[in-house]
Every structure is written in C-alpha cells, then in structure tokens.
Length: 208
Ligand SMILES: C[S@@+](CC[C@H](N)C(=O)[O-])C[C@H]1O[C@@H](n2cnc3c(N)ncnc32)[C@H](O)[C@@H]1O
Image 1 (tube, protein in one colour):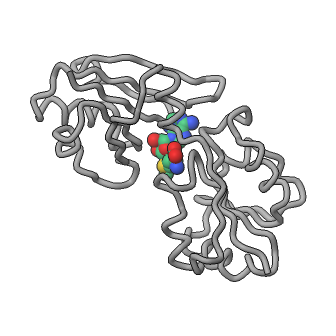
Image 2 (cartoon, rainbow, N blue to C red; image 1 turned 135 degrees about the vertical axis):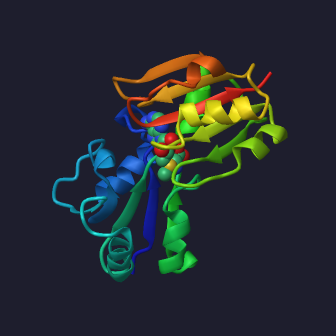
C-alpha cells in the first residue's frame, strides 16, 4: 500500500524544484496538478489529472482517494505544500496517516529572497480565492506578504491601504516569479491603484 504524496513544486521554474521533489514526481504513476505545473516536469507515461480542465476538483480528489493505495499517486502543488495548498482538502478525503508531504519553495519565500528583505517578522496572508482581512493584518505588522488573485489584486490592496490610512506604504509586486518573464515592480500606493498585473502575482507591502 502506498501513501499519498503531496509535493511542493516551488514557484515554477525547474531550477527551483528540490531534487527530492523531482525524484518523487518521477516515481509517481498518477499525478493531480494544474496544467502550468505539468510544464515544469516530465509527465511521460503518467496518468495526469488536471485541475480546471472540465472535471470538478471534488471529482478529481475522489479519484485520487480511490487510487492512491494501489498506484503511486501525487498531488503536485505550487510553492510549498503547507502554505495555502491542497493539503487541507486532501485531509478531508484521505486519512492523515496516509499523507506524506515533500516541501517546496513558497512563492513568497522566493520573492522575499529576490527583494533581499527578511521575512521572519512579516505577516503572511492569502487573498487567493478568499477574503482574509487585509486591514486587520495591517494593524498586526508593518511588513505583509500577500498571495493574490485576479480580483484581489495589487489595485485592490492599494485601495485597502488608502482606506486604512496607509497611503505612504510601498508595494512590491512579483509576477510570474522564477519564469523567464518574471517581473518585479516597486510602486507607491498612488501608482498601485491603477496597476494591472499580467499573470500570477504576489505582493509585499512595507508599511512605514
Ligand atoms: C493557491 S496559492 C498557492 C501558494 C503556494 N502554496 C505557495 O507556497 O506559494 C496560488 C497563489 O500563489 C502565488 N504564486 C504561486 N506561484 C507564483 C509565481 N510563480 N509567481 C507569482 N505568484 C505565484 C499567486 O499569488 C497565486 O495566486
């Protein structure tokens, strides 16, 4: 009987995938992941279950729960497996004792390193598909690391900063991190109000 492996892929570029993660991906027979993730590794000969390609996630996860004991199965997630990933969902359909996690480099960890800014004192939140209280987070820390999505984007964060009286904050936007088209932009709140990202993005706010 096999465990279900949950593997952190890092921000995306193969240079940032840990060797252990690559070995585990190579060994897997069945992989559930996003189509973007599959571009970072060789999926030849594997049964691939793609998120967002027609079948609902609940159905895909049920298939994973049915198959993992008899076939080597992995969920490949972006960044680290313990930071806003499918791990939480997996625990609802697979017993915790059957789950083995392989860490990866989180998009925010990568971005703080690129900015040469330490993050031990940062408050990390996710606005990706959820509405965490950004204004409350601002009262807790002067340094925020934020996962974003299409709606909860840089302009939304800038509006919230303005309303919270933090108009002097600086925003750093990291787009398509680790990929050849990586883009890092430093913005004032006023500039960020009309900023439009071109792809996946994280935002670091320094609230002086
Ligand atoms: C579902 S969350 C997963 C977070 C992931 N577990 C991590 O540790 O980074 C997806 C969000 O991560 C961020 N993200 C992941 N990869 C990224 C990349 N290469 N560049 C910029 N943002 C990225 C984006 O904010 C995206 O909306």
